[in-house]
Length: 266
Ligand SMILES: [Zn+2]
Image 1 (cartoon, helix red, strand yellow):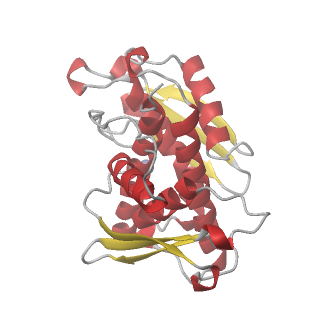
Image 2: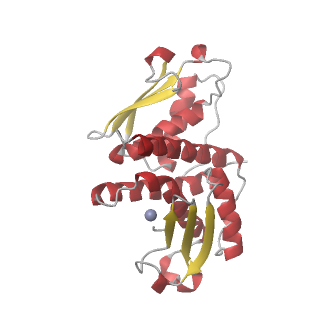
Image 3: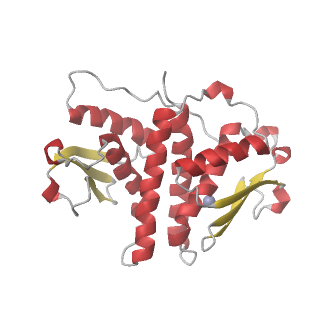
């Protein structure tokens, strides 16, 4: 993980007089930046009737072309909403964008891994949308490193946000020499069967001045390692290309989660 500049404007608010599609297009452009999906072209966002969706529970879908990096997103028409539907068009939009990150290592055929992947996408989207709406953390407040205690608080928050409360997570600082690679900022040992994880984060002692490390990176590393808990059931250690694609997706999503909580205006 490398630190990076936060150069995205605050989340746009809806404009009176715009159609639902125009609002969604504006939101889509913002979320593409946050999720670092600017290299994708969303050729169309449209409303769709319920019978056109792949299953009766779905409220949106995405059709993509990995070669051209183009995608069309369709969202359920309001006329087809049932009373029991908890419908949130932003949530549906962000969920379909998150799927684009998964497009390179999509799990099919294996039901357990497939369900785990759907749940991961759902929880990550919930995390993204809720942090972008609820948090009031200011960027300026985050200049120093976090203490382990502060990180433990952060960990509780992110476990809740990412729906990982049923996991036992232990955090500790580790010296650079204790990590698998000297460039690592963090590392997780995961036991999915017992829902237990040990996360090591690089001790601030070993973060040199030249590293441009800021506290937000520490948080990003923490979120990155927590995301690995969701990805563990469909991690494929035998295939390094898929593995790299997953690592990249995790890194982008961790970045998006931390950035979206920093960019709320108001
Ligand atoms: Zn990783």
